[in-house]
Length: 211
Picture 1 (tube, rainbow, N blue to C red):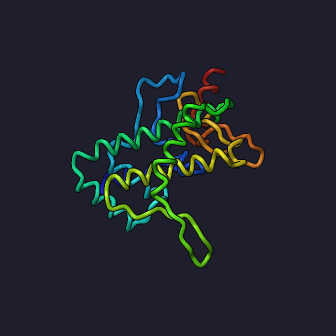
Picture 2 (tube, rainbow, N blue to C red; picture 1 turned 30 degrees about the horizontal axis):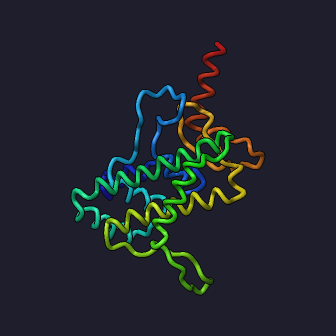
């Protein structure tokens, strides 16, 4: 396992859905944050391929094939990387207002509809012993891989927007944390993305303030 893959495997998956874990790969974008810079955990197209494996969205065999596509593509990887990061940022801007209790931004919803439209050819219905299911096409070009990755995220975003779980979408209560998550707690009162990190940090701040 490469150093790059070990780095990506250290990213925590706490969103409750792949699309939320994908938007959680960056921090420092949230309005009002005191962070002085944006910290992005995805710095290359190879990182993104590793992340899709980490999130269980591609199989190990597919992972190796896609990495080879990336290695063979040379300078074209820059455009593909920029497209996938732009997808992530659009989805973050779509979900953040909803997580904060606001309505869906119509411009961002339009961007999602565009993503769904341009990637529709990347998936097809197949018959299995368990019934008919959606399956993503195999990728033999970098363009197909990029479109397939955008399609996976767009489809999950659409599924969340049309799901009863949307009312459980929350943003971490720490202003300096960008992370979003589905609150699956029984009482629906989960506040932090991770209690042992953001929760502990906020409690420590309050304790200091009370001294």
